[in-house]
Length: 143
Image (tube, rainbow, N blue to C red; front, side):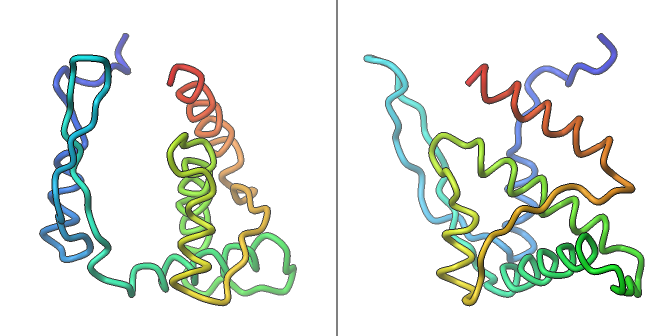
């Protein structure tokens, strides 16, 4: 009961912030039919800053090194958190109905060479990773 979000909370603030920082650019509003007589609008965004994809690729690569290379030196101590971000993002794309495996497809197209591998949450954040994976699985079941 204490974990419930306030009513009327949407993700509009996140998209507006990304647009103000120059990461995304609002391109258009698309009409989408949800039922026979109901229509909703969906905002379509373009990635304005391609450097973001290069940073995500670097996080993915460094996270894989952190997981599988015993001699990897994490200089700033933030690689585990970056790996957690990429793991969550990849998990969300895996479970999305509209964009199954779109993360790997976009990264292969925009940041070659790229090949998505099996990454998971870093050992220090394994419990948080399991909780997030459970939330995503449950959300997918409810559609």
